[in-house]
Length: 218
Image (cartoon, helix red, strand yellow):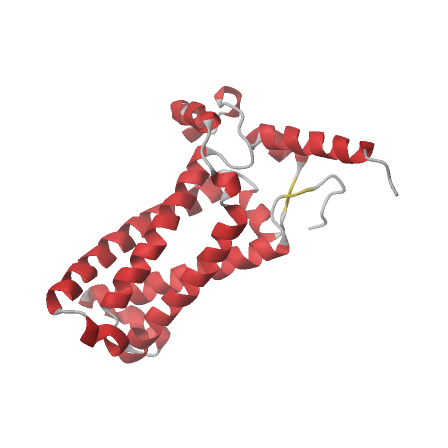
């Protein structure tokens, strides 16, 4: 599909590559983790070459996920800071769920839901990584006691469950809001989309363009 002339860049190529590396790692971790979580799900280990390979590769994918998510934090933490607009957005959660933008307060680049997903994963990814280290027997088994490993396994499982739920909400919201996925695959949105879903962000971009156009050229 040809990009329209008035398209607005929402995510750069670097943003999108970083996001999809994180997303792919997360899906792989979910599949490999579930295969080790319960015997009924062990068949998923076939995707990784069997039980031994699954056990071996799972923590390394976790390392890649941590590094990749740190990249997302560096790129997006500023625009995910909570403000008064987010409180108003949360109070209007009914129209938000109904996709009724006429009765939804205007927001900036990200709404409160997107910010909560970002900060929730910012908390859960390190918890998953640190608890995973405690049960990574090949390298850290001798450094942790059995009670510590049991506690870490429980924390790891609960954090993984929370992360999976947040991921499902994130994916559902991206599909529910039409053309949101295109922003992360092709990098752009239309002015109409921005006006409908992130009006204050569009106004900020317009003001910035107006200011830049007034600057003298050397």
